[in-house]
Image (cartoon, rainbow, N blue to C red; front, side):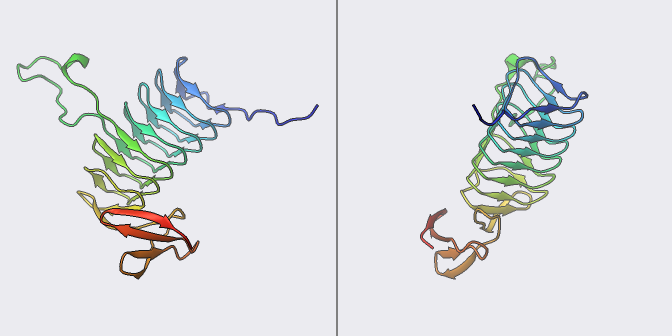
Length: 204
């Protein structure tokens, strides 16, 4: 009887992975990363050195989280997401260390809000995504951007605050405009149709 053996997880001895976290087959977790209780990481992911995944964070399959990225709960990353080095996904819109009365803030004083990153999207190095917001499918956030509102599917955003500066395809290449509202990926030939702030794939 033949078959494929499951891919082995590789967790560096210096990484701190809570016993109540779930790690999928073939996932690699590097030096000094921390994965908190209830976090769920899919198969064939790479979690870089010093990365932090908060309580209950959900990560799909084939996700790459680079060194020192901070993913705070209740963030959710769908399949194929790329998170660059030193990216921060926040979870508190109005952070305070103390209440108006001067007491230390506790978990009962605020409600975490999350960043959702849809399938195939990429977040460039050093970016900050200020929750709550959604980064759409195959979107790309430029390095160093500060994202404060939702990003549409296939959108390229850059700056502080991040602004929509173009469109990218699944290959991550900036799309070329063929004619008004019609775009094409110069690498794959895939065409896209724009309607307002929405871009959708159409036939080649």
